[in-house]
Length: 79
Ligand code: SF4
Image (cartoon, rainbow, N blue to C red; front, side, top):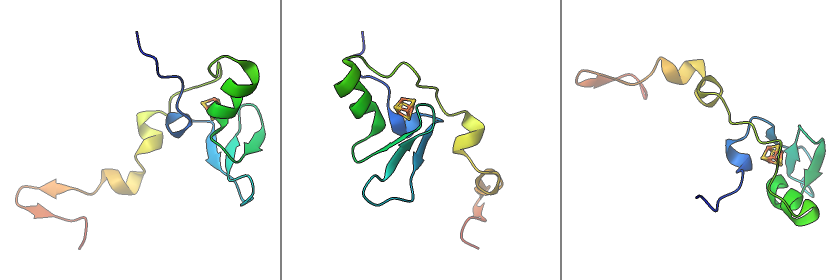
């Protein structure tokens, strides 16, 4: 059994906010925080975050990244 709880960095609801005092944002529960939202949730609720939803593979890889890469002996990433 894994002891790891939800990880905001892998969650589709996690955003970086505009506010330097509260740089992290959970768009599922609609709050900003200084610490990672999942840590705040666990601290306040006493349970791991129940709203975690993993980012989809498409969300993690922008279209521009998908078109780049190694082709045979060539790479077009830094052209
Ligand atoms: S839903 Fe949970 S895991 Fe996702 S950003 Fe909010 S606190 Fe973090």
